[in-house]
Image (cartoon, rainbow, N blue to C red; front, side, top):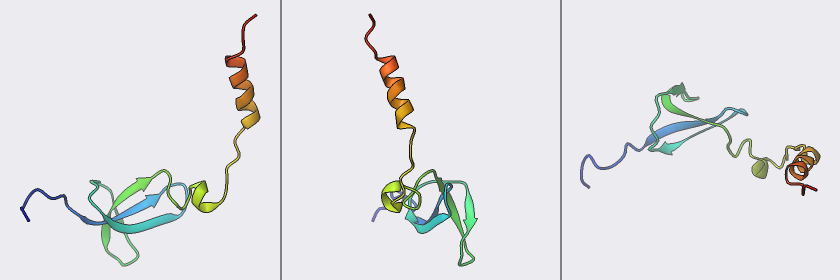
Length: 82
């Protein structure tokens, strides 16, 4: 293997901010944040907005949207003008 051409592949913690979900895995992603993990070691931290811990497909919990208001807004916006 050539030296200096491969990314730094290291353990990284991915943390979902919307729920209490974190996972330690390996990644090449660059980040300045760090966190102390359960084993006492400090690892780079990547903050996520959504993950398998909060996504409706994986949790089975669907967030209800105001679909009636959205339909009315669409109809009002694209209604034929007389």
